[in-house]
Image 1 (cartoon, rainbow, N blue to C red):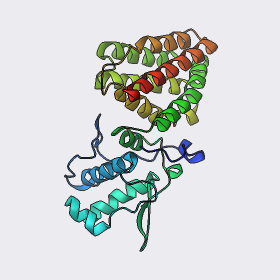
Image 2 (cartoon, helix red, strand yellow; image 1 turned 90 degrees about the vertical axis):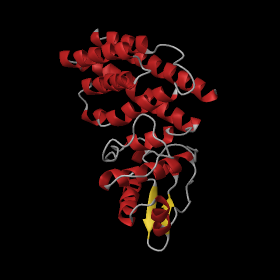
Image 3 (cartoon, helix red, strand yellow; image 1 turned 90 degrees about the horizontal axis):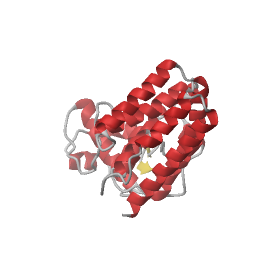
Image 4 (cartoon, rainbow, N blue to C red; image 1 turned 30 degrees about the horizontal axis):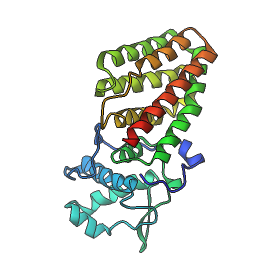
Length: 267
C-alpha cells in the first residue's frame, strides 16, 4: 500500500465495517485470483480483487475505476455483482460513486484502515512501512493499557482462555494457521478481560493486525525468534495481578514484534 500521509484520525477508531460474506480471504489473498462464483461469493471476490488493487497502489487515490459495463465485461461477471462489490468498497471508505463522475478512489484519510478486510488487502502485497508502523503505534497505545486493566479485572474464565490460547500457540507454533488463530485468541482474551466494551470493539482490528503482520514476517524466511515467551510473560503478569508488569510486558511484546516486522520488510 502506498502512503499518502498517514492514518485517519477519528474515523479509523470507529468499529470496522462488516466483513465480506463467506470466507473469501484465506491466509494469503491474491489480486490475481480468478473472479468466479455465484451470488454473495462472487461480489465478495470482485471486492477482494479491487480492494487489493487499491491498497497496492494500482488504483491510487483520485483514480477513477473502469466503467461498470467495461469492467464487468472484462471480469465476466454481471453488472449487479459489480455494483454490490462497489457497495462493499464504499462501506469501507475506499471509493465513492457519483452519477456521471464514475467511481473514484478516495484519499487514504477516508479509508477504514482498521477494517479486517482492508488489512488483508494491504498485506496481500507489500504494505507501506508507514502503514505498518502506524498499526504498531496503535497497538502500542491500546494493548499495554488493556493489559494493565486485564491485570486488575481478569476472571478465572479470562485466565483460562489466555492459558488455552498459549497452549495452542506452543502446540501449533505461529508458522501455522492454527497457531496464528490462537495468537489472535490470546489478544482477544486480554481485551475481553478489561471488561471495557469500547476496547472490545477493537478486537477484530487488533486481531487482524496481529495475524497479518505475523504471517507477513514469515514470507521470506522463518520467524527470527520464538515470540511465544513474550506472550507468556504478559500472561504471567496478568495472572499475578501485576498492573505495571503487565503493561510493560505487553509494551515489550509489541516493540519486539515491530522490530521483527521491519526486519522482514528490509529483506
